[in-house]
Length: 104
Image (cartoon, rainbow, N blue to C red; front, top):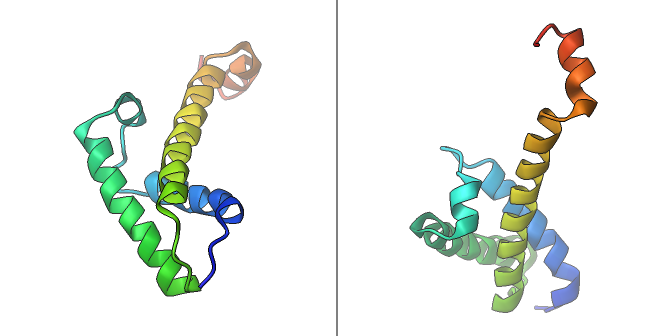
């Protein structure tokens, strides 16, 4: 059983981001980012799921600090991605695409 916190953080973050992104029903990242009961529930479920996944798949016991950091990084990454998508969708850079597709 090995513990390499710095090596695992990006992988755990990515794995958690995928879990959050593919959840059904989809998660309102705006509300979650502000902190809600949904965030608390999501945290409990996904951090436990990550611990179990790493243990059963790799025989690695994740450090609770690593899982905690990875979870909040995943939320931040998805939230930022969502903001960027909203910004770019209404930006000048995409106006020509909208005109091309006759969406304006």
